[in-house]
Length: 199
Image 1 (tube, rainbow, N blue to C red):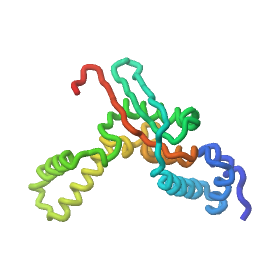
Image 2 (tube, rainbow, N blue to C red; image 1 turned 135 degrees about the horizontal axis):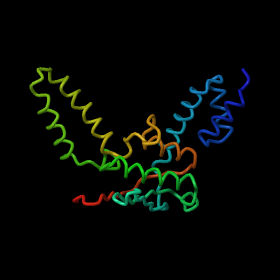
Image 3 (cartoon, rainbow, N blue to C red; image 1 turned 30 degrees about the vertical axis):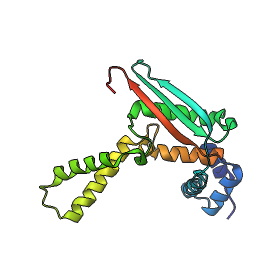
Image 4 (cartoon, one colour; image 1 turned 45 degrees about the vertical axis):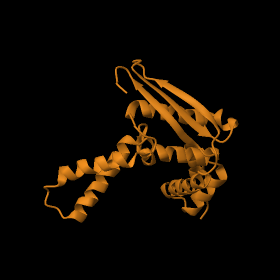
């Protein structure tokens, strides 16, 4: 079957990934656009994983002040080279992440940043909520795991749904940029200020 070049063009425009990779994905998916996009996402995730151990000594600090002047965010986004830090895609990603933090109020970058003490406290709250449900212990533990996952999705930046695209998490967004740009990208730290909020 001949590769549908209009699909290749569309995939290239939507993902920003090189024309050859897009053509290979469309070919592999037998001209099925959705399947080709999924193939690229999987490849992107694998490439991003391979790059995740690379050192990110360059990058930028971005800021965002909400229009009402009552919420402000500072974010440090790391990359491998100064060349990438000056790249428009990298800067757009930094802006999107800053706006995400302003809008969605994450407390941590990832679940690895949450102390065991905080996780145990959450589990205790869930246990006390369902202790009189009459459900067996193994089911209760599954319910607690489900509630913990929801907790991570709310408080961890990387787990949050991207405010511009509900089918993507922030981790997916960063992975896509790593695949497109070809360098490791890491959210190093952030701080969010809200007027009148106590530390």
